[in-house]
Image (cartoon, rainbow, N blue to C red; front, side, top):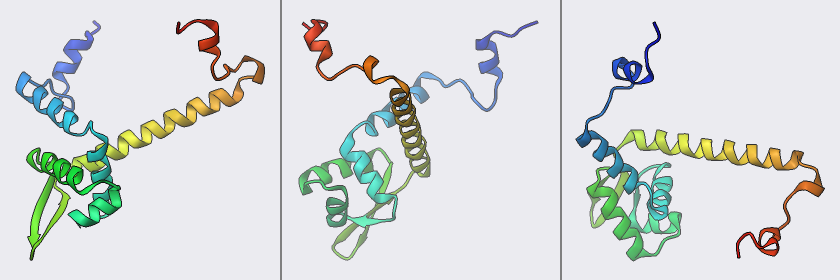
Length: 140
């Protein structure tokens, strides 16, 4: 007898069903990770702990924006802060964030390479030209 998809996923200990509270926590974490400036900070922290001034330089952010985004990441528990004299040093507090970012970045790179390869296989005459959609009136 075939099991349905729902009964299989409920009984699979590797992929337990999450309750509403846990799903909201996951959604909140993805919300925190959905802002480019925060991702740039996390990328800069991949190489190790850094001060605010170092992060401003590495992530190419303005001081005010970096401070705001660091506060959001800190409250969410994604990063940690310690004091060294008068400097605040930040580091990644959630090791899974490193793995998640690597997984997503690798997936995006593979998808881009696949799209580029598919486009390269198309004959030149069938490739859409820049502006064709506008000229044909599809976006009018």
